Figure 1 (spheres, rainbow, N blue to C red):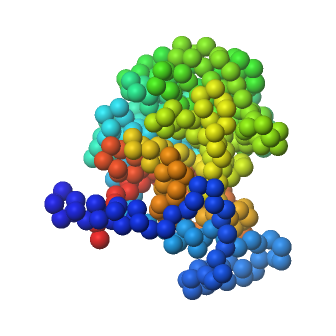
Figure 2: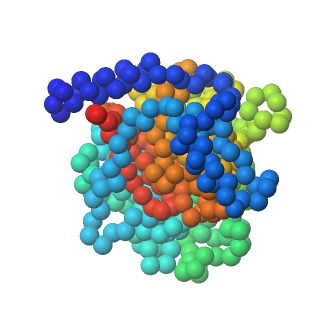
Length: 402
């Protein structure tokens, strides 16, 4: 990197620090006037929408006022010949600080079945985007969450069972599902960097909400002392809405679903987990459009709504918080737009916003047709990576040097 480019990056970062930021508990209020471009966009979205079926996003102008510091590159990851990228919500950085791990759905939309049954879904790429290795074939049903611990081990959450299809809206097995499968899924797996299975949490293929079962686990994270935290639950039944804590050996310690003393404040689709330098556990409470911050015993410390509808969380060594919002839209009638909000895990200030390249979906556009970045991770040099479900996509973001 040239000295000029480095100075330019520093200048951009310094500039961003002085731009207006969102207060920790600030509510997203619509400004008195909107930028012309936003007003035009809102007018276009309103066309053809029945009365009462549209709610203008009050957050959009505020997000547009934040700087977008990143340039997107969708050509970085180089797959082996004949290997197709499937949907992915899982991405993290290797222990070396620069290699990238992803978990994708065996070349398909959801499940590792049919012609993709023997495709290894867990993949590693080097810092130049070159494919390094893959493993996990015939062991994962519905790849969802991914975490690399401080020793370099790979943790994954496998959302669905290949025995009990009650998690599907149709309640029937998907096409090409195995007839007499080895029970897998609805569990959390720990692998060595070479792909050796080291631990399994939950009962393979069986849903439940006791000490030995999980139900649609979305994410997993580990603490400095090795304790394990699982976000147990998604947004379709049978699903738990709880955080489960285990010790480093996989012994169940406790579980909780409430957020503080208010019985009405509960977890609803804890979709992502991250831990800051203080050891505080950040939970992406996606169903309730907020981030919950707990201590490691489940006591609520704070609730933040200014980062959108969190699908993915990442906190770097400087306590910078990256929040991927893949579901917000005027269709969902919440006050955010899709993209990646970046701010401080210490103060909750939102400092920049990188919009989703697919824009904010209109009310008549089914969400299944398009989603934004769901998984998010950042390497030791501040390079940002994202993973998307629909359409399947991996991207690299570098700080603009303009």
